[in-house]
Amino acid sequence: MKKVIYPGTFDPVTNGHIDVVRRAIELFDEVIVTVAQNPSKTCLFSTEERVEMLKESLKDFNNVSVDSFDGLVVDHAKEVGAIGIIRGLRAVSDFEYEFQMALMNRKLNDDLRTIFLMPHEKYTYLNSTIIRNLAAFKSDVSDFVTPFVAKKLKEKFDY
Image (tube, rainbow, N blue to C red):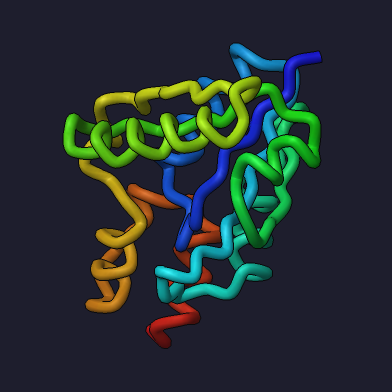
């Protein structure tokens, strides 16, 4: 059974993230979407809220689970028995950072593979920061996130 993890902050989860999950489940037996607790980022939503949004957004996928971790991705991957790490690439600008991380992860655990997946082209401009900024200005984000996530953003920004 080939199991992979798809780590990220998912603050919030977008349709682009969901598209990457959809692509990953076509290739692997199990995908664990895992919320990273990144000390260098200040998140709008708590870890618990991000897990809740992911679980609701991915509830129709049979071979997908959601968890969270605090620490190194390679350690978490080993802990859950994953053979690889899924990373989404939207544009060339993502590649340099992701490539550096993939090389470091390989150095830390040579048995773990990084698999780069590109979302559908209609999501290449989409990221969580843009969604948070739109929501902060009370803009409609329903084309970019699930209805549940849109509701959570409205609650967070009180509109």
